[in-house]
Amino acid sequence: MYYSTLQIRTPGGDEEGMRIFALGDLHLEGGTGKTMDRFGESWRGHDRKIFGAWQRTGRDDDLLLLVGDISWAMRLEDAAPDLYRIGQMKGLKIMLKGNHDYWWQSRAKMNRVLDASIKILQADSIVVDRVAVAGTRGWICPDDSYFEEHDAKIYEREVGRLRLALESLKKQKSEFDSLIVALHYPPVNDKHEPNGFTELIDEYGADACVYGHLHGEAIKTALTGLRGRTLYYLVSADAVDFAPAEIKIIRTRRTE
Ligand SMILES: [Fe+2]
Image (tube, rainbow, N blue to C red; front, side, top):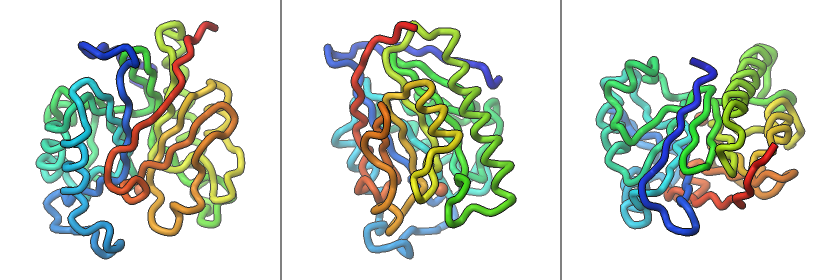
């Protein structure tokens, strides 16, 4: 399964090509009754802000990357109402897992409840209208203030998964013009030091890297903007004012 690559073409599209948006940390309630108010005033009614914003700006031929922490639900059936709402959002949605998505199940089980407009990204890649998206959840990076010994193994595994995701694209390297790496966790530690994730991002020359997970004060010191040839975007809901952020990439034809 790890080497799979899905190739999708959306109908229509204008001269500028498909628009790409990203949002992380939707933290929908999943039947838990859990609100996000305790994370700050801005989170009050945050789900209405998110869906309202997309109602206004989203289009059927947009690509929307949802980078984890989708729902507080513990079981897939409890996440179903949240997944239904996501299915109703305009455009093609590519979704990956965050650290709070305990409801997440096998691809086969998920696909039974997911709307056809939602695709799962899990250590693999999807190409839509010549835009490649490769991703995995990620993990806390070495030498971060919160990094502990037991994190090393999970970090290494996630770096390996990103490599698999990117390798899955090699087989069709001439069939995409731009590359986006999508993670839930930041691709760097809190000192923005290089690591296995950034090595891969650099090696494959990703045009953009989108990630979430950071909230509140951590947003201020997060890696954003250009590093190497890659534009980094933090798209956790409170970092982007609860509206999917447009990801601008320069589409240069890849010929290797
Ligand atoms: Fe998270």
